[in-house]
Length: 144
Image (cartoon, rainbow, N blue to C red; front, side):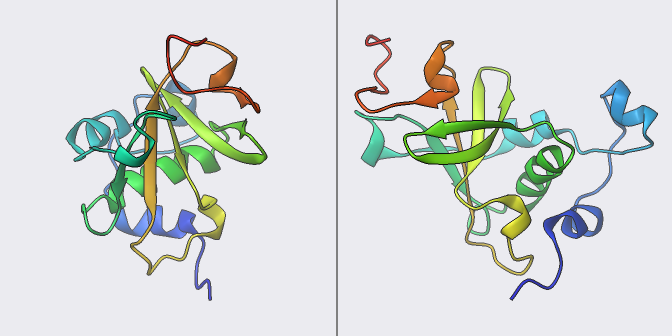
């Protein structure tokens, strides 16, 4: 049962930091410094996918990354996400620096009291696979 949308978690649980985004500042929004949160997160390799679709992840509750997830979802809620396809799955990705970030559960569907969400990230390919993955594609960089 959803008690409140993730946006309410952002306002209550994430300390507001001065915005570095001029457009957000113009709207009066205060957003956490997501790049600082990303740099401090304990990313671990998704070993199962090392040879197919290499990526890293954090487990929100176990790794104490509630603020990072809230910052990610706040960016998605503000429309900064890009809908991409991984085979038949469509989801919103956030492109930051050299990585793209995603969750398997839509932010709007997350339950505020649950800590079992996973935030994933993968290095960008700098080709179509960053936006659409089709049958026959691989995650190996030498096979662009």
